Picture 1 (cartoon, rainbow, N blue to C red):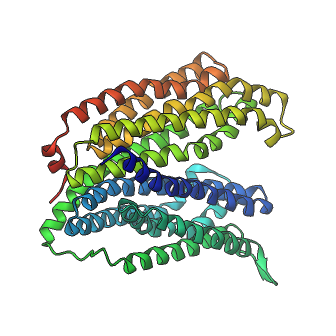
Picture 2: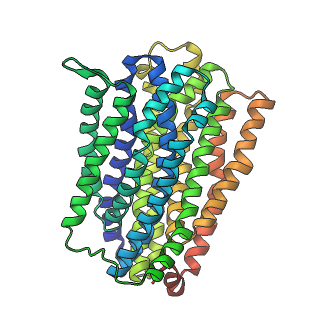
Length: 452
């Protein structure tokens, strides 16, 4: 595959993926804006419940991302049976995991909510929100695997159109369900959850219609039940480390936030203001990493390995360039943050200035690691990626952050510096593993990744 066509293919895949990520993040922001007029209790209830659901959805997305690599290899091989098995295996695993989480939210909700807050009114509001939002877990299980299938085919614009359909429906429905219409009483936080549920149902119907109209796909299973069960088992072995990796990183972010809460209120507010910008600003880098992994997986499936190392190098180079551009954008952001958030305390602005060099440089190191991690997963190194992330975050960085904050009473600069330090710790192992994996990767290893 010539480098030019490889890059062109990656770009066409990446920009819809990046917009998908931005739209997903903005949906919670829209619900927050709609609920905020109801007051602090409903807003806090939605925040707590949405965080619980978002954590589960993150795991489901990670499982689907793992399935996306399997499906990309199957698409690259041109074997329709492999695509069908990969799809149904991914769907089975994700739905089963979703059912487990749904049962937990249905029958252990009182215990979970009681552990989070002892405010009776807040507990009732959280339970009301979860009464509808827990079904999002079931619908997301299906939509994410459908999205993985389309992405693996290079049709990332279809999921983007699905989000563009869902978002306005969600916003309009949620507004009227929350606040009411023409004498009809609003449902409060329940309305926000119901609006999201209806909107995602419509998106799933759209994706299903697109799948049905795709004449190039035949998802009928033409193999025995034992063969499908074996495929599901191998599929699960590959994708569960991806989900475990995302889970530990998500929990790690929460632990960082808890540690940062032990700083002064101004320092904590400064970090809280910066984090959403960091997540949104790095979406294009993450999308590029995803598209690179899809392209690498397709090449492995088609056994076109001659340009594999060269194309991986090209992906890493582009990721670094994008990360530098992102860092320049954050440098510009550091000058206008006071205008975006006026009327803050002087100490908060001072804290923002102190961490500015850190959040400006962070995307460069994180982008480098992100593209390496996704490409390594495409090469079948999911467990190794998990080990590097676990050691770098949980065995080194988080304990060091806790020591600096809780024992040495460090300033916000040194506390926040642990995040770029974590990326530096992981960078060399990622690079060495990627170089070694590419040197050793051959047709035998490619065959081993194929389940048929």
